Length: 199
Length: 178
Image (cartoon, rainbow over all chains, first blue to last red; front, side, top):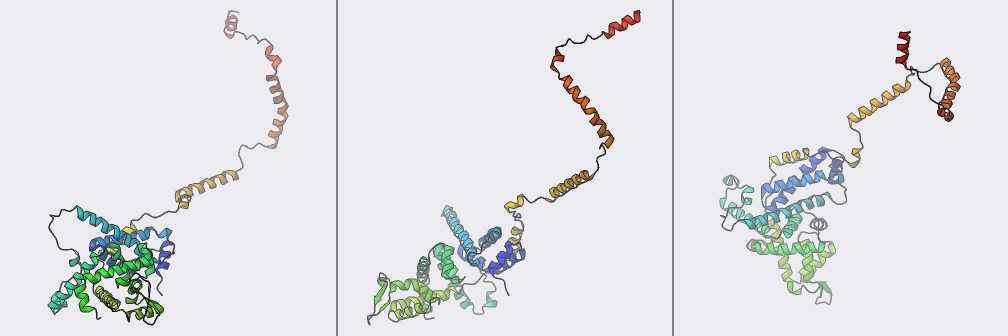
């Protein structure tokens, strides 16, 4: 029977390095994906995820299982991501408006190579790729806190109680945050929503 | 939907209270992702049966939810685990506050050697120990020593003139002349 996250963390606290390796294996992908969708840069997302695991490891001596492990883990990740997004925004403001526009790194990260091999119907593939790009842009346009709420709710499937603890707000405020986020996504994705709302 | 948001509860055609569009805002996400309790879900469906605007909103939110599923997951790079492990391995071993009291191996060895040496010295018979006859002899001399102490510190004796010491040089010369 697989050990729970809390049990693994308590074992790490007791000096079992192997338990830390199991936690790393269990949460590496969810964390990197969450951070990638927050900061829209793969390299930065991996750096932040490394920092999250390092902070978890450093805090092992003081770990007390007062909340779910995922709440603690994603609170660290969310705080790092929000700080990073804010830092990036200030850095972008400093860049000259005359700087040439470059394509976003995000579009190359989710690999589209071997198109002909994977998608015999290239037209269909292009439609899907355009659609995905729209979705990514719509998520990116959300204010940071709304974005974090949607990602934790939709992709990590955390419950409202956990997400509200991670974001430091009430459950009621979280529901309002999610409602506003979905309202914005609904507007941004209107062409796609119109074709798919009978789903 | 927004227009009716001010009121929490509205009165339906049959005079019964039904959920308002304003309360829908709080419940709609839970309804879309199936996280509402049974009672709340039934209440929601009752409202949706009478409100086309909210029904449309629910359909649109569901469509958004489906679209979000289309984003692919990325796989962390092969170097990711290696980097995390390297950073963790580079972390200094954390010592708790009481570790300061814990002796190092070197100090513990030195302390145990000191204790052994003390035990060894303590167990040895001292070579300079006096035998019974010597102790008795000292005891016999004790009154003499005590008298010496009394006489050496006897105040009236200090008033006596100091004995004249013979000039050793002169006396030698006189002896030579004689």
